[in-house]
Image (cartoon, rainbow, N blue to C red; front, side, top):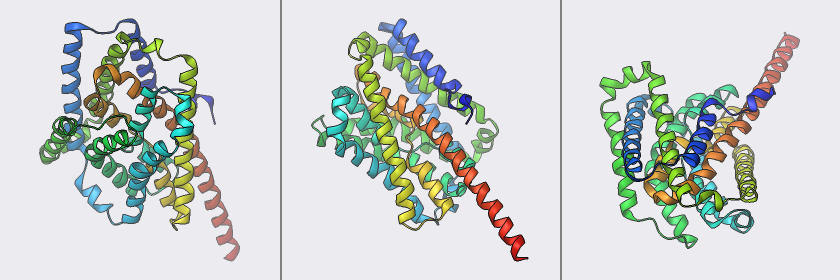
Length: 335
């Protein structure tokens, strides 16, 4: 595995630069209000474009493999929250209470879409099922994530999520998404032809939220509350969660009788958490001064899952090549 494949991508470098920029030049006062409105507009536009891009036909076509989709959704919205809660005695000594809230929020998020599909394709998995599962997870998460977050936080004495927050999610994320679906017949082709634009809005909205979040957190003394030992502990916590999810999805799919291609889809769709959905949702669900601590676990988990899954996808692909060679040799021998 070339070292360059394990290095951060350009977007991760932009995230790092944004955090540094917010640390050195945090926005405040009137500038903070302007950035807050820009962020809301960018997020609404992002979900509108995703609604216009997501093909209903592709989702409907993939619904026949219902056992696989239920398994992926169970991993995303049941396994992860259970891990976050059951591992509390192990995780909380490593991080601060505020970071633990961010970890619980991370556990309730939907799966990624683009990277899940990409890694499934590289690993020679069931790509059509990955498209359906990842898309369904992203859509369902708009409603399920805020409800799960409220339940999980309340169970651990962190305070309940208000219905006002759920309403904000519906207004800022779900309504633009539905509007995009309605406009798909007119805009769908244009959006498909201009995918870089969707990517630009996607990444731009995340960077805006991260900048405003870390600006507010820095003004509240974020880095004084976050020594290197706590950052190291957070990396360990993320590694434990990711390893547990990968092991359960891999061996659980085999125990349930899925074939190799479906196993790959379950592993890559069921073990990821979406930065693109998580950051906008955190912006709605949590107060500005707490956002930095909330999104930090997700930002680190995002890079960790990409690096780990890149290695796994290529190992799956190499194994598939060996199987194909062996099958060819066996066939030639029989002939």
